[in-house]
Amino acid sequence: MRQLFLPLLATLPLLLGVQAAAAADLPACEERSFMQPPLFYPSVEPQPDGRVTFRLCAKTVREARVMAGEVNGVPNGLDGTPPGLPMSLDDKGYWQATTTAAVDPGIYTYAFRADGLRIPDPQAKRFSEGFGGPQSIFEIRGPAIADQFYNAQVPHGLVSILEYPSASLGITRRAHVYTPPGYEAGGKERYPVLYLVHGYSDADDAWVQKGNANAILDNLIAAGRIKPMIVVMPHGHTPERDGVAGMENTDFGTDLHKDLIPYIDKHFRTQAGPGKRAMAGLSMGGAHTIQFGLPRPDLFGAIGIFSIGLFGEQEQKYRDTNADALKARAKAGGPVYLAVGKEDFVINMVPPLRRVMDDSGIKYTYEETDGGHTWTNWRDYLGKFLPLLFR
Image (cartoon, rainbow, N blue to C red; front, side, top):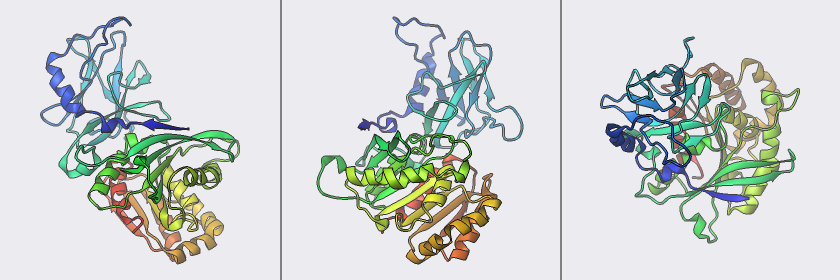
């Protein structure tokens, strides 16, 4: 089943500008019945100094915090202190907190913790799924990353929600699929395909909602910097099974190789073959790419690995399992891009992977950037990886 999904970032006004304009007329916090008009208030408001104020109308709550690990000025808990920004009641009955530092331009997720219960912002218009429950999203635009935001002046592709049968796993699976501008008009043109996988705490909507991947693709295609392509964003998790965990669980790869790729090639106008097919992913999705993409030059001609590598004890097993396949990758060539942040907690996993690729003769581009395990980096890596594809 293929359902049209209109990406919210393509239809939203400048969220923060709208909320900032409304703040001067902030209504009093009050409970409203089902028959009354809903209460609208600016739950995310930028301040003149670059900080951001969060609000929550919840009159019966005794304690509230803002949970936003990638937002400057909101404790993320990595230093041992409690995560989240404490909120206090203001004179209009709102729980309110302002970040302790200016927030850089970007796309950010957040939620509220009210009396210990984590909830999305009821005033938000954009959300992303996740293991910890849905998260709300806000944007702060800036010229340095203009390519990462919706631009009304360029043609736009379409993101669809695809449900497909997985015979391998005996379940129905889901993916998000980006088709480039003009694809939906029909015709005979066929396109190369990138399989782009999310990280552990996310779902298949993450590269659209958190990563703005469709906006990045639209802008780079319009600028002539990348080839028009289809991008398939699979659900990276599979049902848990006893006795298998991590790289021992090959269910994602089985579904990808035997079910999803054949389904996409049958139902979309694709250019099949490894030279017209690529795979990339971040964190867990990068681990999937290491395991199910890098050793498969017969399926994928280009590989992108963002913010992940191999644990020390995995290195020898990976070598032994994939020795011939990695030599075949080296012989086949094709771009391989590996990137990680200097402050990323997984950076020590990168040298073992580099040793494996070096010893196998695989040529690759390696980049260490500022920052850590964040969407700020992953959006940047995607923008650098896409121009390498299908040339």
